[in-house]
Image 1: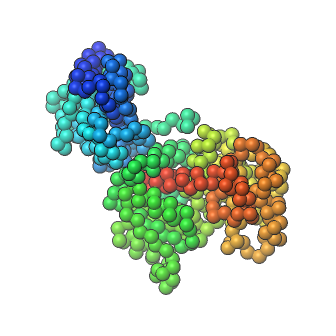
Image 2: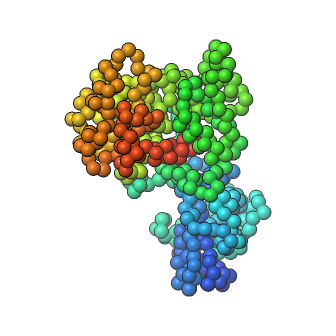
Image 3: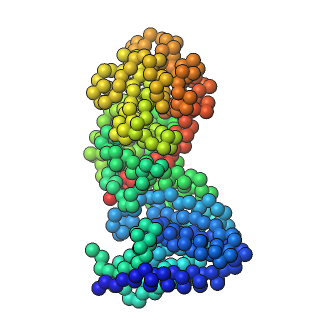
Length: 177
Length: 315
C-alpha cells in the first residue's frame, strides 16, 4: 500500500506544528534548535526562520550527526557517511529543541540525546518531529508531532521529502524495496 | 572543501588499510571527507564519541615511534575503544616468536584491530592474510605509511581547498622513505604533479616509472612548487656512504633560509617528523608561517580516527 501526502498536506502540517511550538516557548528567552541530519536539519532551519519572523530574538542553531552514536549501524543497510556535527553555541542551561523528520523506534533520538550530553547540559530537551509512525523500541516520545500515522507496517518506510534537497515537499508511505 | 560533496552512504568496503597504492581516488576522497567529520570531535568539551565502544585496538610496534603510536592511541581512545600498547622490547618477540605467532596470540584475546609498525616491507599485507581482525599499516619498512600519506593529503587539501593541479616536491631520502611512496601514490591518484628531489644515491630512477618526475637539482624546481614535503634523513637506515657528508646534503638538499627565499611566497612546507633541525630543514622555516608541520600532527589524529572507524565498519 502506498500513501502520499502532497505539498499542501505537508504545508498545513508544518504550519500547525510550528504554531504549537511557537506558543510553547517565550519569544524573549533563548531557544536552541538542533536539527538531526539530514532532513531534521532542514526542518530546524525552516522552524528557526518561522520563529524569528514571529519575534523570537535569541534562537541558537546547530546540526547533529548521530552516526557515531548509533547502536543499529548493522541494521540500517548502506552505512551512512559520517558528517560533521556543528554545535558552536553554548547549550548549557537553556531549553533545547531537537528536530527530526520521522520518529520510529526511538533509537536515533536516544543517540541524539547521548550526543547532546557530550556538548553540555541543556535546561530541558524537547523533541519535535514531522511524522510519528509508531513502532517505538525505547520509552521515548516527541513533545511536538506534525502528523501521527497509526500502525504503519514495519516493512513500510515513511519517506519525508523536502524541497530544499528533494525538489518538493512530500511524505510517502510505501513498502520497502 | 567545495570540490568534494560527501556522498550519502559509504563506498568503503575494506577491512584493512594496507597501502594507498591499492585505493581508488574515490576511496581516498571518502576517507578524507570522513576525517573532516572527525576533526570536529576534538573541538568538543568532551572529546569522545562511542563509535568503537567495546572494541579493542592493539598498537603492535616493532620499531620506535612517538607521533604515530601516540596518535593511534589517542584516536582509538577518542572513539571509546580499549587500547593495548604492545612493543617489541620486553615482549616474547625478543624470545624469537614470529610476527604471525605473536599476532595470532594477540588476536586470540579478542582484538578488533591490529595497528602494525614493522621494519619489513609487506609485513602488514602478510599479517592481514593471517588474522581475522582488521589490520592497519602504521609503516612497513620502506614500503608504505598510508596514514601519514592520508594526513599529508588532508593537510594539503585543507590548505589549498584542492589537490588536483598542485605541484608537490618531496625532497630528500626518497629511497628509504615509506612516507614518500604513500604520498606519491595518494597525490598522483588525486591529480597532483609530484616531483621527487634527492641525490642519485637516494633517488633511484625506478621512481620515474611510478609517474613522478625525478630531479637531482633542488634549486632547479624550488621556485615552481606549491608544496615542499621535506623528508627526514634516516640515519638509522642509510648504509655506507649514500652521501658524502651531512653538511653537503644540507647545502644541496636542505630547505635553508637562502633556498626558502627563492620559493613561491605562499609555498606550503611540510615534514613528517621527527625533524633534524638544521639538516634537512632550517629551524626558522619549520617554525615559520609557511610551515604546516604541527597542523599535520593535529590532522593525523582525525585521519586515524576515520581509518579506525571505517575499517571496523566496512560495508
